[in-house]
Length: 131
Image (cartoon, rainbow, N blue to C red):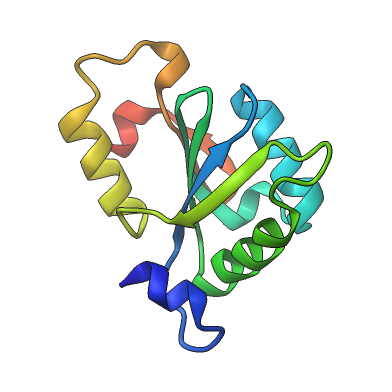
């Protein structure tokens, strides 16, 4: 359903995207590319998780920003210097749903490198406070 919402340019409901990466990236490297290509800042997303080096999950603060990034990154995917191979709507939409999924499935097994970054008004919040 969220994927269908992204594919039609009107009435989008998705706030979360999953990015399949063609090269290994750090969280910082991925965010730098996202900022550069989409022209956004850290105030426009509130959840970033790279559960492994070739997958990134981002929840945006609005459906409009999510749709904008989807359109830009879909066009840029696979271009030289762009490590995004493909993207689609996230399985979980919204900050609360992404946090709930992560806390239910991953907290017990995660080390520091695989923890998501949670932001409130552009400032990082410790995962313990967010869950």
